[in-house]
Amino acid sequence: MPVAVALYYGEATVHSFGFAAVSTAVLGLLLSYVGSSDEPTISEALYATVLGWFIAVFIGATPLLEFMSPVDAVFESTAGLTTTGISMLLAPEALPKSMLFWRAFMQWIGGLGILTFFIAVIRESGGISRRLFSAEAHKTDPGSIRPSLKKSIVELWRVYGFLTMLIMGTFIGMGMSVFDSFAHAFATISTGGFSTLGASMSAFPARIQAATVFFMFIGGVNFVLLYRFLRADIRPIRKNSEFKLYTTIFLAVSGLVAIELIGKGLSPAETLLNSTFTSAAVISSTGFSTIGVTSLSIALQALFLGVMFVGGSLGSTAGGLKVFRLKALFELLKTRLRAYSLPETAVNEPKIDGEILSNSVVRTISVLFFVWVGVIFVATLGVLVVEDVSFMAALSGTISAAGNMGPVYMEGQKMVALSPVTKSIWVVVMLAGRLEMLPLLALFNKRILKNK
Image (cartoon, rainbow, N blue to C red; front, top):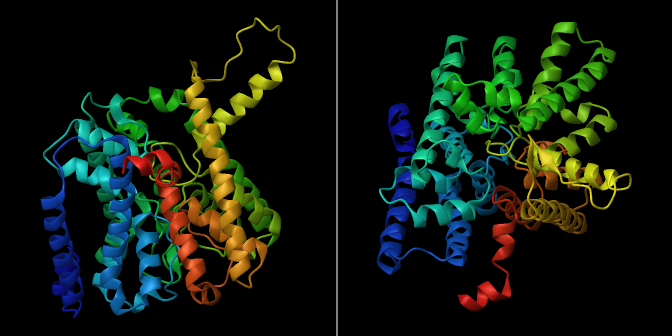
């Protein structure tokens, strides 16, 4: 596809994409000869998933090597495929259009997951697909859409494609160029945030920014709920407690940002637009911007760190720990507090939407929370050891990488000048966050290593 874009605009980047395409084809052929047709074990699925993402990142970086250093190209590719959106390009508009298209297209493919895309297009289904899908583990099980896993994933991609076309059509109708509409539609629905312009969405009229607020918001909503809504079934959205909490967080953050912007002298219309845009960009992990986050108070910047840690809904393209797990932790806390006033024989279990959370779910969420905090702490410490940056800059960059968010409390020039060590740390953290931490950490399990 980027080759077609390069040919259309008469750009001399065809050889870069051609080399990447040939390399991918050769690698695929080699792997097809050495691979096995048997269903993978759980450990094999974990290795296939994690190594598949790493291979995709390096292949995605290949065309960018013409314009960036190898480390920056790998970073840019990782930020694209994981939909993080942290960019090493201060002026992306200087790139050929085929490269801008490639950056956006990587985010679109990474939005619902590389392996879910493969599962949607390959002929085989069954055990192999389910094991790979389970190993990727960053999406809710879509079995409630269709009995077949493959059919469920295909339905999710149809919804994804429909929303992409809807965003594209809206942007074109509002006066955005066709090319920019393609690129920003890919980046919006995937909650990736790469823009074709260094000024991001602030370069476009207020009407386009207002439409983007809505599209960023729905990008952070569970796609199963969106699927039901598009089939005229609004009951799941009305009853879903995660969606209600997600909306509440969005409105609360919008209100707090609006209060500060009013104090800065902005008009009511500007305040409403910028506050809702900033809130939607942060909670959905899209990362577009109309105002500089660092221009806001330290209190709001700290609040954004918490929101970035949580992220969007389970089963969405958004990153972060996920709102559902935050609610589950709240429910677990409430059961512990209730236990002090209830008899020992009383039934006191955490519930969400009327369903009791099983012990395995509670344990998994608790472990995930611990791992997220641990990874962010260790990675932030590593950045502080290597770089001469503030604690807020290091922490924001690490949380942004882990949550696949985008905002970093650091000047663009200083971020581009970071050492290869820091960039490598954030590359690993971005992939860990996209894979929900556990699959990547599981590779270091001694028992799994013995099995290999």
